[in-house]
Length: 604
Image 1: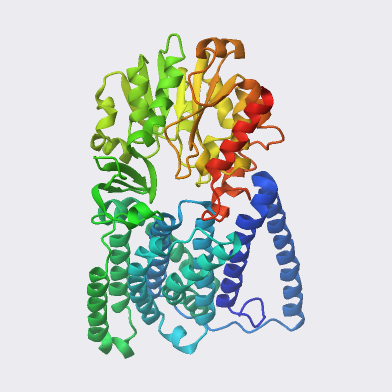
Image 2: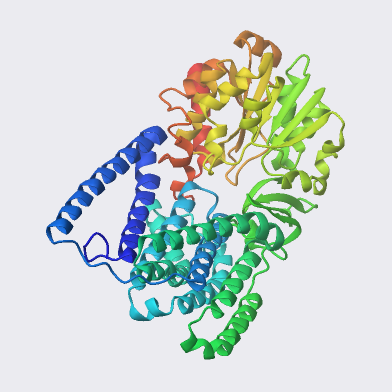
């Protein structure tokens, strides 16, 4: 009992978890899209402060009632021994390790977006809430180890289903119904094992009935959670990948819980051990070969025949080189670089032409390109173009070390990493610019898609100001402008943010990379640390491109547009994000291209 009231620790734990479910959904789907990061943080702080005040008032009232009644009889103290502490550690380790592991599979299936993380977190928290409520059952309170074992078995059985989530990924339909469907899918598959494992800690807390023991149990559970999350990411992923990691965690937790069964049911260990062995055999047999014979992802390319050439699982990403059959009319198989289920780059004939231009254009239009910076390496075609067109020194910065390790599988980069003029850095590109103090004549970057988690920081006004500060006078900057991966609203916002910092800028459009309807998909924003007259002089008139927006035309294109900032997180949380639309009914490249042509026509 707590404070003389008839309320258990498990019930408080359940209510706390339910509050977390609500706040995750509220912040991710309502608050951040509406008011931005700073205002959201402020409102959350106000809510916390209000909760603290209410708690203090309630505590004083509870103390007055206790004193008026002469105090309440203390509940009997149950000793917390080694078994209880091991159970607390193991349950925390299992739940957080599986959360990290399964999120890797979910973001591969649903793409690495903020809503995918919110869905996964809400599903886990709902399951923990249910587990806390279930812990009041007499059977659960007496046998938490048995529930932990059952949860581990179900976690093994859930893994083959999670492997196949990419095959069930849906990008069509209304956004709200799609999110509801994903939450239900996540709860249906991940919920049962997490519910059973989530019984353990609340049951132990109720059994303890003493403040010091509560602290020890909660501390042990938290320590296990830290070990589980770090161990899954930094040890298990490189060793076994997400699927193998799930097997290891599920099998290990089941094995530990077998030895923690109470004496009255220890006689069933042999049968439980047999169940574990059969379950492991089943899930291994039904594995889809993730990382070896296939690469998962929500794209028709990966649902067809493909060959895995190389694969790396790391704490931050799963990276693969895949060969796929070329379209009709091409003789050579395409090689693609997949990062967490998304085709981030590749060698795919004329469609990869823009990658070369990302390096050629800013270097070719600079009279003396000394130091150059390439942010996001991909397959190395941009970096190679920077080298081939005359940059004296090249820094290449990428947060994913696997892209450097797998560079050898893409001959189009002509072994650029072996050039003595090239230096590679495994680091966030924005952080490198901010911390290194290096200045450059050319900066070119092709981040992950704008609506991916974390990408907002590489399309924001604040980031372009960082680039400008490190760009030498007359320096050139090239920013990838993927018209097929942004709604027209967001395309204008990205261009507006770029133009605010580099008012002397043009938009180049690749004439070779087109979608199935013939609309160009790839653009490049080219800016100069100088005047518009200097830029026009470098480019020449007319510009050697199919369609280009000059500075005055770009200004027309962005009329009325919002800006992308670190605060509003427009690309990650904004309601006009590509992932919020029915992609089966929209062709964003064609829509944005039409807006570009309209701006060009109105400026003539």
